[in-house]
Length: 315
Image 1 (cartoon, rainbow, N blue to C red):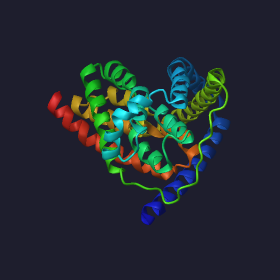
Image 2 (image 1 turned 180 degrees about the vertical axis):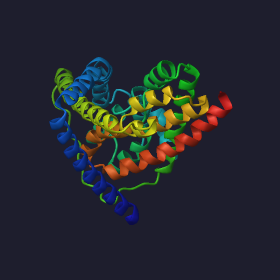
Image 3 (image 1 turned 135 degrees about the vertical axis):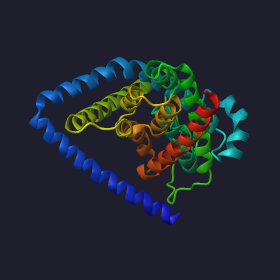
Image 4 (image 1 turned 120 degrees about the vertical axis):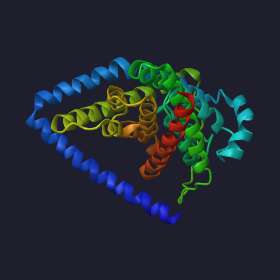
């Protein structure tokens, strides 16, 4: 376990150094080509306002209220034996996993942090749940990738099934993980009535969605800058920004099995843009980026194997 902690510390240092270098490069490019920079940023903000804002903001509000009020507590009694025996994540993690499957990232990370802050899961369960709940939503997988990009809904459903199976296998892989330093944590008591909860949930969701808009803009500009210097292969673009990478994969003349596998790998990893969105929430609860990055890498590798097998059998 000590060796794993050292690896995660090294990953954190590499991440910070890379971030500093990329930031300096983008600033210099913005000064050299301000027109291109402004145009790219404008396109990113339009993408956020027309696609992400209407899709994510209501879910942020609703899931915040659901987690705060523990509305789905009866479901926990049904899922508790399964979650305890398979993933060792406690009785409340079952409905958190189901909500994450329905809503997709970064909501999965947000709801487990909210649950941790409310005392519904502990620090160990928070980490183990991270390996379960960092998944894409079905609407993006089937609708955006399967139908719109690959023009094949069947591929979309294969990728969706692969992502669910991958998250389960990834959760099993981290079922015995225990963080080295476990902080003392007391959950705050809910103050006021439901009206105050609604207002606080909306306020929290506004901050979250604005943060996501800023991250999408930064990463979108970054990938456009890199593409203007040297064309990037689809996988590289997808590792940076998921949607762009899947779109580029769809343009190539890959076989259906390979296209499904490549898109599934990118969806499992999420891209560094999704990493930044998810880690914004996870960092508030003390989850290290090294751990998050490590479990996303295992998730990516598992998805490659699972998706390719399913594609061979079902296509």
